[in-house]
View 1: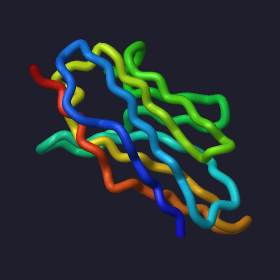
View 2: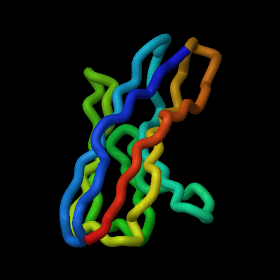
View 3: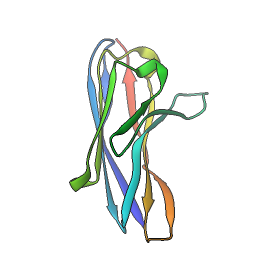
View 4: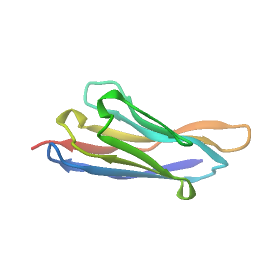
Length: 119
């Protein structure tokens, strides 16, 4: 089993900055990707940012404002968010596609952390 533990999040004013981190632990043979999704009230969960190797992928509305990075030695992914907007308010979920054995590939999810952008 693999656990994803998120930290960061909270309340920030519009235009402010916030950082999230997520550490994976447990039965990890290798990690394919790590990243973040978010879900706002009444909306579907959407991809925010993913990193696989040196390749990154961002949702259009966060490009230029959010930066994803990864520390492979610590199995940790980070999301730095600047110029936050009220529409960024959501529960942010860490996710990782983990190879737990050579043959078994599973996507895991963290419990989520609330990000609220409001004055």
